[in-house]
Image (cartoon, rainbow, N blue to C red; front, side, top):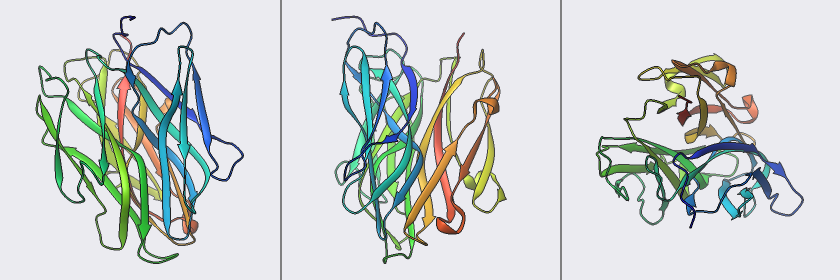
Amino acid sequence: MSKPATESVPASAKAKVLSGASGLPQLFREVVNAPWYPRQYPVGFTSLNLEDDRNIRIKGFIESESDTKVCVCNDTWGTTRLVSSLSSWLEVAADDRDLQTGTAKYPGVLTLGQNATITFPKAFSETPTVIVWLTSFDVGTSASGKGVWRINASASTVTTTTFSLKLDNVKSDSTIVNAEVCWLAIPSDRSNLASGSFTTKEGTETKPGYFVGTVKFATPLPSTPRVLCALNSFEVRNAEGKFVMNLAIPEFAISKEKLTWTVEGAGDESPLISAGGSFVAFASY
């Protein structure tokens, strides 16, 4: 078996909606001369445009992989219509020397409103940073065309061997039928990596439903990094059966010292109350 790469590969792609009842989009990344080795793929959402009177449903997953390409998909089910989506995803070697990743589901490992202890496959020498992305969810409101879609995933109490993972719907006017959260643990002793989380509550609402904020890295990186980000929480009012959310970190807004993020809803059609995201930044030495 070929030796795994020493560093994991960041990637992202825009979903193209194909024909079909489910509106299944497929995302492809071509990998040149890439030997096969065991690997995992954290997947998260940066942009979603969904329609349903009651429940919004979507799942990001790896449909297939080979030596030359990976097929990353977003799919809906039930009565939810997928208009468009944008995903971030990361290739992590199963025995990567630095990064560790995994997933947890509700129902299953996760219980709403309670901390679940997650154990790292192997212990870190120093306490890492852990970020989480929403990979799949079925979230409903209290009544058709009313209420608020809410979900919040977070990591806390991180040690060299474990951390606490929590999933919550914040208030009783929203229900979570099922969900899946992926987590990524980033070592603290890598000078070319940075990671963290942010929420719209920490930013500035420059116009209704449009938030902007800045995150400073703990220490400057050796070069301008490539950044991957995805949602870990949202609160969106169900006004017209439409859920629209766009999270972005533009390339021009990234430097060795900091990054600027934006989160946007769709005005009266999809009023954004709050949202949060997590990021990981990869810089070259």
